[in-house]
Image (cartoon, rainbow, N blue to C red; front, side, top):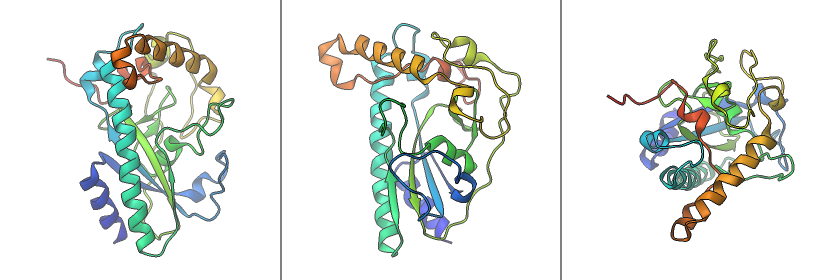
Length: 239
């Protein structure tokens, strides 16, 4: 099976999780500057973040170690994606890499396509109330990337929201950017659960906190991580 070879390439290259989504389930998904009608499947790649770096996050400072891990995870995902895209091309099929962290529209604060939606459709986790993918093993402590392709693959099964009545992420958000909402697979819109502008403003402010130390400025990133830190799914045992 092509899935077996695909998953082997991804795991050897450093992926923590990988899955395949049937893009027909996402035809109503908003995309920017790309058309997905030429592609049948979306390959979702996830790289786990060092969990203790997330435990060190503070309300007024996400920490340079988390910011550093964030950069490295994004870079690793893009490298894994290049390996996979090259393999797909060698088999004579189309491939299109969606970078791990790249905004296509700065005003709308969106990328080309939602990595989280593809990962959910691939069965790698569910969309949580923090708007992030919640993987059963790692929780939200992962970064994601995607590859679109017309290579025939075996897609996974989407996962329903399993947050129950938990609202830890909502209550912990320093800006109040998260809103409580019940949904089965995906919220009707991003705005239903998340105020992107409030979150983005905080991320920029925290990046400036990291930039103040000039000898660490190369590792500064637009990160907060509070809603990730408090999530009980995948939280490390601290005893």
